[in-house]
Image 1 (cartoon, helix red, strand yellow):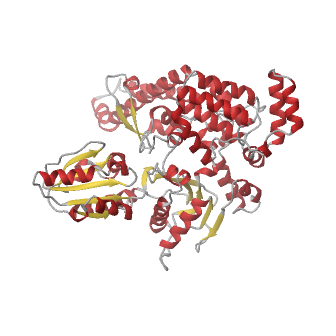
Image 2 (cartoon, rainbow, N blue to C red):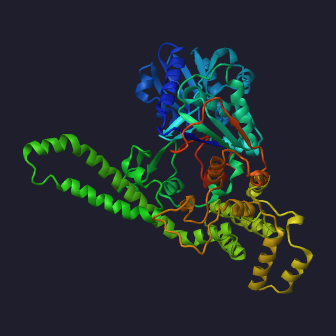
Image 3 (cartoon, rainbow, N blue to C red):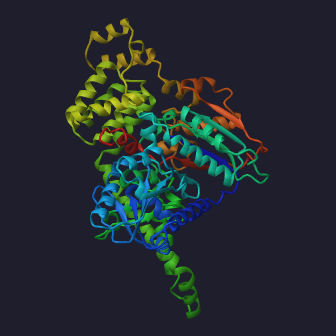
Length: 586
């Protein structure tokens, strides 16, 4: 997942404008087909569409019925049909010809319009022609590139980007990323500087520059200063580490989708699930989202006491004061009470799940991998995890983390762990291992990177645990691990002998309990401090280069007050990233 991070002026821009632009264009496209119509919406587009134009808005523009397109035929009853399609899931395309042909069989001849989002590809129209229905439909494009999920988080909602580009080599989404940059530049630019690293980032930048018209730069106050473009494969370790801040754990366990989470009855203490929007408008969530989970219960307890105090002040009020309280405060207190109850329920549910999974032992293993200590014990833990069939994705995550931090697995360990994995989770994952290898997530060390002959002989002298540790020690000297070298060069792994106070975080490592500073974040910090890539040549070489820095025509913005906006192809975590590698994904 290529993603970009921006640094803006002291005040955050108003990104609600992006929603209004998308909504207005969609309405315009719907009105191109006048009269009553049904709207067929590809399943993956349902949640983003709901954030842009709800059912009421659609019905105001003659949408009669809405259908979610899945893997079954759909029968429409309206005179006209509009079909909205999301780009990636072409697996559902075979359903559209079925709808048209079924209508023809019943003597119903309607007008059809296919709206592609975020852009229209030649292959889509070619498919319609192959199915013999090209003449029965009109096509259009909904340029829905950017969806604001919060005040400082914007998503292209293209989870397929990662697999398509980095695994399949499909470059069709590069222009989409360039178009998203163009939209940001047109509305909130011009940009002061653009920094990037990674081949995809460079291509997206060049695509954007091709779309910028001469003279488009306007003499006005820029709302976005510096732009950072970073390929996802520049930093694969970060998404594979266990999240320990509140929002990250909610995403890992309950899956946040398009900024919304569905809390199960176990959380809501009722017989039904409840969907909750998670953003800065939720005052309770906004205060705990970035807190280490160990600090969350204390905060929620204090919040509950404060809320009770606010309720208690009703006693002793006269009629006038009570009327003011009811009209001005009570509604807000009730809403806060509801949200507080949900977040307490979610915290309790997460605590039960993590305790059950022996979360502390898991974190200890991860931290050892990041620090490069007790690797043989870590491998034993992973083997136990696999053989107990705890979780296929979790076992895969640990294997990938081991491979990335150790610059690949020793051949004997790779073969052994791979065999155990296939025996536990199924031979069908042979293709998954091939995908992981191709992407560099799980690889076998090359002969030049393994032990020397002398070191190998030492390892063969004895077979006990001590020999394993000795072999690991020699191995760590012989291997040239980019992660280890990057860690030393950028100080990504704080010294383990230093006590880390999670109540008062001293650096970005707190999001991983003080064990690791995210590489992508550290890169941005270093580039900002140096005003470019100068002095980071060794780092960029280890990251396979493709770094660039371009200065715009505007004057340098204020660097004293930094605020960051994250613009991403999709929000990801370890489970989503690895599930996209499964070969039954397609």
